[in-house]
Length: 144
Image 1 (cartoon, helix red, strand yellow):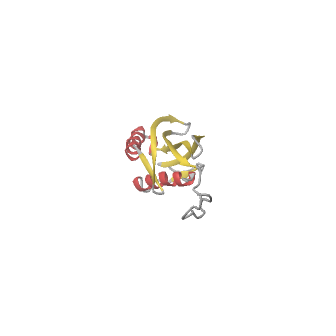
Image 2: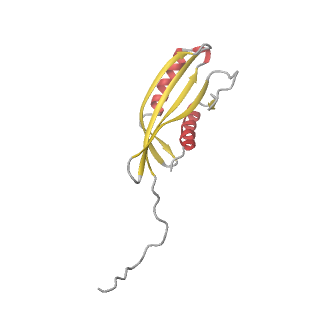
Image 3: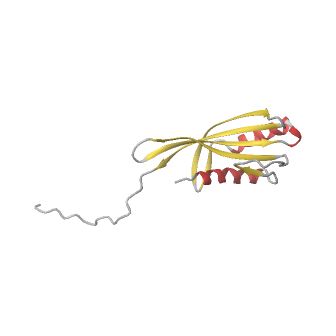
């Protein structure tokens, strides 16, 4: 099973490796942080049982970027970079999860420009465990 924290950590690792030196905040933005900075939040959207053995999971990774000096040029450079990093799939603990699509917008939040870069993830998860007991090496049928 792929845990939500594993997915969030995989995104965080990729962003850290490619935007070295820019702080990444999880879950809550600290008052008084300095731009440039990232804020990341994983938002589960849907978990639907497909059959007795699997369920589909849909979630969104909301990556917010606060550009230095409220620069829209800087924000759009980050859009280009994130689109290149998160094209098709992301590796999470040796499993490749499909990235459905991305969407983004910039907005003014009252203090400055914020880029919202949303990545939608959709994958299937096995929910039925394989039996762990021993299997019979031979079957004896009486009366045959």
